[in-house]
Image 1: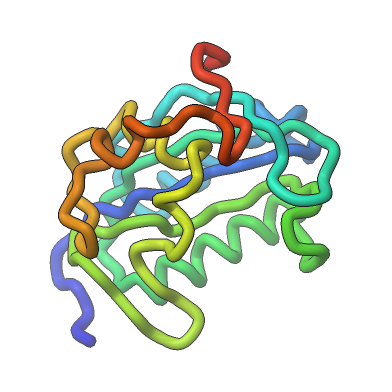
Image 2: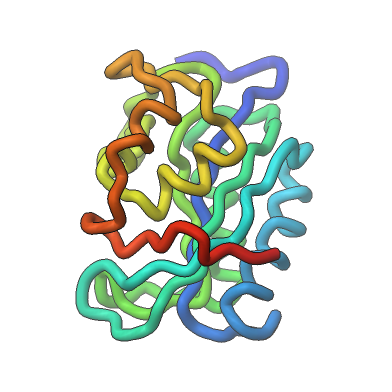
Length: 172
């Protein structure tokens, strides 16, 4: 796969349900957006929403989405996201457990991407209201390269039952 010569737009999902050095989860997400600006130009950031945890964690999540223009291929962006998570105190652990910061690469303007350890679009993004809701707020017309449906179309059937996304519970 070729390395992008000009910046590509990346859709990144952000989540936190444990306080970190930056403060409570909402503050962690705001600080994470600032860290994303080190990778490229942050073009848009959704409101932060509260969601029920997925899996065994008992703590509610703060979730958001950001669009960032980055002049690097997806595998390099993933490595940079993992480095940011580590800088914020994320440690390997139980899947879906409490975490200071979770950054997921959801979409990129180059379409689909498959490499060892990375698949874009994110394999589960179409079923996660806590990703679709915030992403629809900033990129409603972005088309899924697999289904051809827009983020708005994919988010429309979201009822909150799949992920605990609570419409109307937003904040800075």
